[in-house]
Image 1 (cartoon, rainbow, N blue to C red):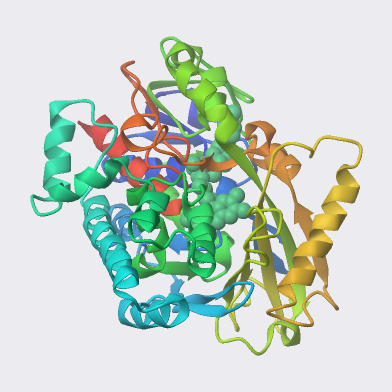
Image 2 (cartoon, rainbow, N blue to C red):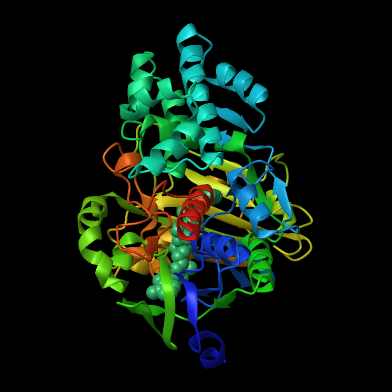
Length: 490
Ligand SMILES: Cc1cc2nc3c(=O)[nH]c(=O)nc-3n(C[C@H](O)[C@H](O)[C@H](O)COP(=O)(O)OP(=O)(O)OC[C@H]3O[C@@H](n4cnc5c(N)ncnc54)[C@H](O)[C@@H]3O)c2cc1C
């Protein structure tokens, strides 16, 4: 079967990796008439936005929310281009942020969020001016993202595309390209406000994987406002989402080859895979940059300086998956919550955790009378390979459940499923070196004009995914897939 379908032809484009970036590129190219094949090492699509199923539950292993998949959004554009009509996304109206000393509602609706942030953090001229700046940046750069802005700028064509996307009225905001979020807080005299800085810290850690003082201001403004861009959960979680995307890709004539690890790509674009050689005219790697350098030796010298630079800025995640009786998640309006317990302690390891609960009535995610719950936190990569692995995993599991009980007091008491993923798990299931997930911690030194580009100057070789511009998250990977597909089609 593999020999007949995959090996007996030279593909227009072979895509390595069937996660968000890979499937985004594949759907676009296949819809544009290219003959494409996706080579995915794991047993099914999804990668860090994938899923696993157990005892009638379907758990999202990484991303639980899709960003900007509402009409007009970056994600929705992919659905349109691919002709996907059966996307069953439920828009989240917002979520709860539980700070050490207060609770804040992160409304999706801008007017409600504006009232809430003034109520929760202060209504002085400085607060208003700070939020106005963030809103202006977010307005201009979300619009630019939807129009297909591309970075790093390398050609005259990129300059023109970016000018069109940002627009003349947005150009003066380019001066903030050298600011961090911390700079903006300091400029407004707000850097010492624990609650405000705590909330922003949680939001930027989740979206740009960084801290208030390191996060580039423009990236942070986009991250802090992702709710406004729309957070969506698909019916059946990521399992439901990938079922729709892979089915459409196959309907378009694309070949999704699961269980097909690519070992190396040799000159002439022969891909040496687990199942035999595959030939292609062009290749897109959606593996993390360090892995791409191993698999595609031709790219290694050009990637070396980026990989060396970014290595210290990688991080991991730990997630507890609970299958629980519905009564354990009663009593909350929202299905998603973000928690912080200590303003003074570093974020991660439970101090900033995200709880996602499958929707009531979503029986693709959980059996009737039950719900699937995912509790995630950032974790350092070090220390997960020692002999105390099981103990550390157990302790983190207990910590996350105990802290989540602030929102759902009975959570986990009668769990039908209780499992935990650590960097070791991600390394095993997504092949990410050391289990590093979600791109690099973004700073002024590694983002935007300094990010890893999608094309490194070798004809026919492309890169996408969350270690390339614009970085982590479903929306970033979809935007990257658009840039790569446009480049190939050109
Ligand atoms: C815990 C967690 C929570 C998150 N929450 C959110 C969220 O709520 N919203 C959001 O937008 N984002 C979220 N993210 C980030 C988001 O999931 C990722 O940024 C995104 O899914 C990365 O997609 P990718 O295509 O770049 O890489 P990947 O998803 O890693 O895809 C690469 C694929 O390549 C495959 N592969 C690896 N090696 C080979 C090989 N040699 N040959 C063939 N195939 C190979 C892997 O199996 C994988 O499927 C979260 C991430 C994590 C870890």
